[in-house]
Length: 73
Image: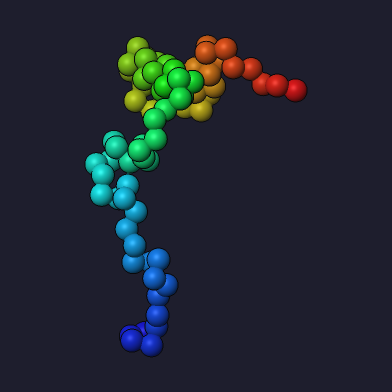
């Protein structure tokens, strides 16, 4: 331990998302597609109507199905 141990250069870099408030992480600078936006809105609507801040995976699947998504063969 000490000066003989080296770390890769990338180990010292900070992810830009680390500097953002918790609710803003991972959004990046890319715009959402209309399909992505519809999904996000559907999840937000579900959470608000059902007082569920953290829907389960089962609930997310129900939301997807309500948007018309089905499993393809």
